[in-house]
Length: 513
Figure 1 (cartoon, rainbow, N blue to C red):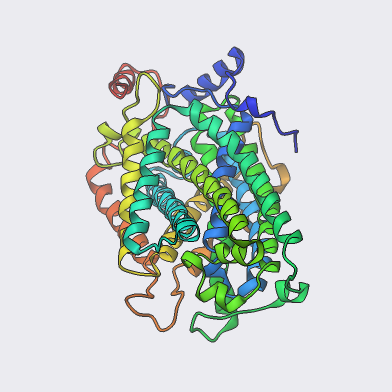
Figure 2: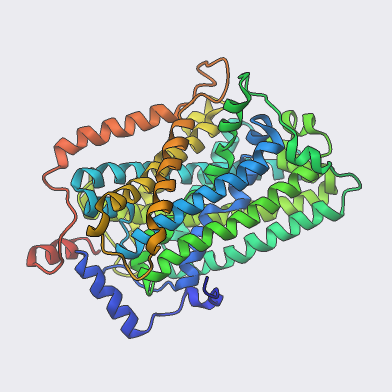
């Protein structure tokens, strides 16, 4: 693994020769460059690391994990899932190196398997990215409510939490309108905020409390609060915490048209983001689990309904808990901002190839900031709609996170599978797995097939209107709408084979405002 670049690498302008090579490669892939290539290798890694965000995923789903297997499943599940996700990331990085475009997964699938493969991959990817925005920002709203409760006795309700969620979405939309330079700077800060935050939280929980749980408790205690009796089923459902957190690393690919030396930097960004998060996340989960003072109270009666907040309160007191909650909320805000950037680029790219209703609107790019402004607003608007069920169902947040997993995870595997199927017809980019490509690729495909099925299953028993896993319904609806829209848009949809015709130049210029 190469040395991590300095933070200012995230915003530097690429050398003219490197920029020219990447722009030429983009034209070979069929697209006229219209986005600003102002992100370096560190910035590209930073956006995926920020989206994975162990201080968002691990913290927001920690309460879910406490009842679906407990500490044993959270710790061992994190270790195992992280290994398989690293295989997925390695295989995806190889394909990204060959096709560094904002369309990322769907463009890869289109090139390797044909138009319909690209079409459905794009819709799955889009569902996952939009579900991720909803999950991340709603989690930030939950933690904000817990902080307000701790400081001023504010009792968060479903309605007030949703209003906080909408305010956070608006903040992220506005930040993304200023251009990729600001996004890159914020992501670079985010890396050190996350790493420093994990170190401070784990250190405080290790040294301040007088009492800690035993090693046996942290690594072997199994807790089942799901209503299901089969421990293997419960443990499998409990893997959602890790799998949800380990998602979003395709952000490096979606920002490749704005990254210097993208054929290498985007691939490295994916892999580096996963293994750094793997280490940091394990330390965070272990630190939280060792510091639990009263398991039942933490799980069922936590301050603000957020178990990690209760752990911090019991272990550190109200002042320390409030300070560290601000660290967590800050990390979640960085994470959501990075996810909006990635999702908006996917909306832009998909619309550029006429795949979305109203594509002429969503593919427009600001001539001043070179940012896809309408795509940013569409991304946050749909994320807001996905979280509306949280107003009526206490289990809706788990469903939103499952929507993210079952949408985006299959989209990761499709280009990997198609690359394996293509065999020697696939021309690797400058970053390649070589002889390890097939074993790692097939491991990734099998793992994705397993977790996709797992997270369509009900998480609570008995299954009622309130406990239903609506993620499978969301997946079915998206696939149905994608199928219907295919027959409307199949004649206009398509990735270009090469850029340079007068018609293509005219279409691109119409999208710049």
